[in-house]
Amino acid sequence: MTWTIIVLAILALVLWSFYISWRASRLDRLHNRVEAARTALDLALVRRASAASDLASSGLVDPATSLLLADAVRRARLANPAERDLAESDLTRALRATLGEQRDSAELEDGSPGAGDRAPGHRDGTRDGTAAMAATAAAAAGAAARQGAGTAAGAAQPGAMAASAGPVRAIPQEDGPPEEEGAEELFDEVEKAARQVFIARKFYNDVAGRTIDARRRPLARVLRLSGSAKQPEFFDMDDTLTDGDG
Image (cartoon, rainbow, N blue to C red; front, side, top):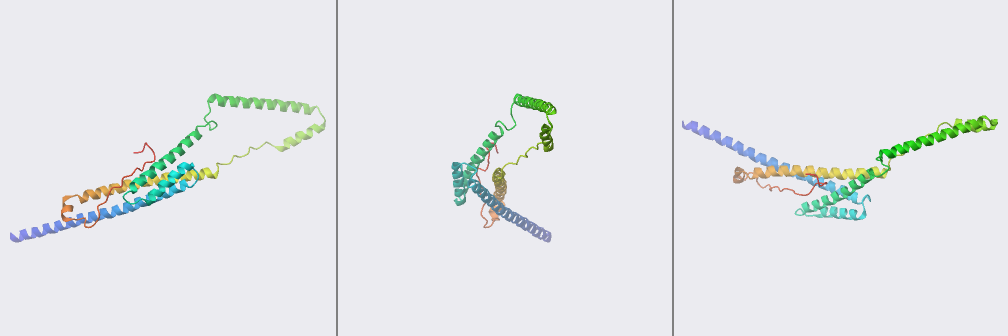
């Protein structure tokens, strides 16, 4: 009986040791994930600041907006860790205002007259006028043909030259200027960088929250399973580019 109790006690001690080791390993893995997520977040913030700096110096925005955006980028890059969330939030607000102006100008250009949204009556009137002009041109051509039939052979030579000229080809329209394509790519790059910041910050805060919860468990606090690892902190900032984002 005594040996049975001793064996059970040893078995329980071994199982308890394995459990403690598993909890400590889990905490260590969570801390490693926090560090990796924070590194990814820092890289995303640096990429966003670089894209915003390129936009500010591109000349695609007005001078006042360019100065505000460049100043927000400078303060975000020079901010200390305690004030970085505030500086990054200021940069988000500057980007939100800049991209909002760009969207408004694009909507105004799309809705301007001549962009294909004229009233139906206006389009019908245009077609009627074109038809009338075509009928007038046909009548004039017929009169000229009848007049040429009763004249000397000299009148037939210009007609032959006109016939040999063939149909008039329409001049192909060129695509938009390269500057507009470059501007769209730059604005898209800024939006992609901002979305990457949103995703990276959400992932980091999720991992940080799970790590903090694991550190607060009674067993982890009593046995100090976290060791010398620093407790992670949430990174709260404004990272939405539109007022309707969650």
